[in-house]
Structure formats: C-alpha cells, structure tokens
Image (cartoon, rainbow, N blue to C red):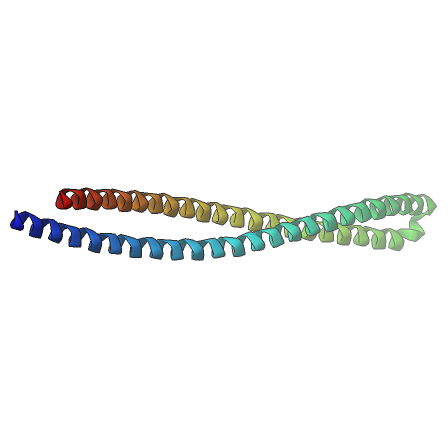
Length: 165
C-alpha cells in the first residue's frame, strides 16, 4: 500500500509538472496571440488607410475624367471651328491636338495610379486573411491545450480520491 501511495505521489508530481508546462505553453500562446492581434490591428489600419487612399485616388480620377471630358469637348469644338476657318489656322489645330494628347497621357497616368492602389489593397486583404487564419489556428491550439489541462486535472482529482480512500 505504501508503494502504491509513493507511486501515486510520483504520478501526482509528474502531472503537476506537466500541468505547469502546459500552463507555460498556454501563456506563451496567449502572448503570441496578443502579438498577432496587435499586428493584425496595425495591418487593419494600413488596409483602411490604403482603402481611403484608393477611394481618394478614385475620386480624383473621376474628377480628372470629368475635367478630361469637359476639356475634350471644348477641344473638339475648338478643333471643328479651327478646321472650318482655314488652312491658315493649322498651327492652332496642332496645339490643340498636343493638349489633347497631354490630357490623354495625364488620364492614363491617373488610371495606372488607381490600379496600383487597388493592387496594394488586394495584397493587404490577402495578408490580413492569412493573419486571421493564423489567429484561428492559435485559438484552436489554445482550446486543445485547455482540454489537456482539464483532462490532467481530472486525472489528478481521481488519483487524489483514490489516495484518500
């Protein structure tokens, strides 16, 4: 009986040590999860900022498009008038045509900027999704560790009941 008590005490000490190890692992996981959560918060702010930048770029692009359309209509009108006047005004036609090309170039540059902003938002969304999945995996691991701790505690309680009987 004394040997059984000694074995039971040794098992209890081993279970307590393992419980302490699991508790330390859980603290480490919690710290890691908090760090990941902080990183996700930062990424979320970056994503919000990028979305706002993309929205601003989109609004700017719309304004530029309206200006472009307005200037384009003005230039077309001027072009038509200049062509009707005569061949003497050919230099004016050339100038208007160059302005038109400049506007097309500006519009293309603005469009590329908008595409680049959208690509950045897309990359941040993918990164955020990966971080969320990582946090979910950490939470599952934490739940598994909690279940192990409960199981170990139940075993220890059972051993203590046997020991007291």
